[in-house]
Length: 365
Image (cartoon, rainbow, N blue to C red; front, side, top):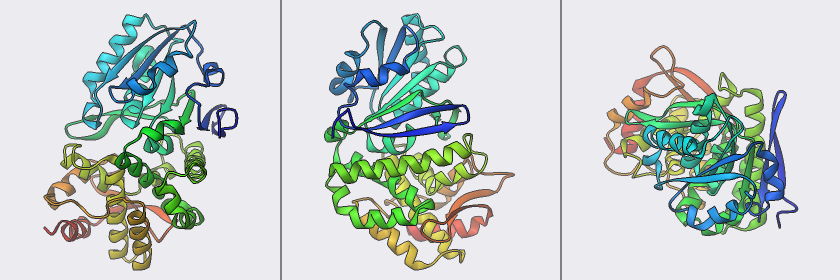
């Protein structure tokens, strides 16, 4: 596989669309992605882990463009307003005009922060996603959600701002630590669990190949997840309905991440445990069968993902954090649950006592 034959998926949004390229050698294939740069200025936003590995390769494709870079430290704790302010100052120092472009080179934290900064500068300039983690390739780089965290919760501030292109170079996954790689697989499983039972069965059959990072299985899994998400985003760009389904496991998962101060669980790990909790709640409410929960547990386990809440979490605190979720309405919990594999749905007015019972069983509290 090489840059001349990547998988290409178009995200179509009415009169707008953008490509998602998936393959090897794409960061160095400037002939492909330079067309997405419309102006004379570019700011590369990256982090201190990724930049030493890939910044020079991207910079080599910026001949004739005035560019600079802005780096943040690695980790969810750095997705803050303070760093958005620093990114905007970097754009100001660059002299960035309204046709400038922000290039997000990194994982989901970099992509969210860079995209939000692009959305803010002069009320919105172009940006390109160059995801370097599996999690970002299959989820956060596609769909235009950007934002930052507050102490009160994750992603409470943000904007919908679509990229001009997504460059998913799987060469970057060769340097990804095993734990970071596995966390991306949780989002792949999530897509199948929401609305594609055939894909879920495919994942069960190819769990070993995915765990071993085999190219063919990896590209196929990324492409299938991106294609599914692209369809959902095209139908519901700003999450008024169907797109909320993509948050299966997220209300539980975000609460776990926030309670752990973004240091205990990685995002995909929170989603994995959150999906299990959502499945257990669905089962408790009589919506789904125990066999579906067990299939989910087996697949997550085969991919090396956590399925249990770590020790030390307080169920009442988790419930309070879940009340802050953006999907909630009129002071009641609105969760993404399921009626079995591939049959997720939005459920409003969920009984908090039932949620608390699931959290208590999961935490031993």
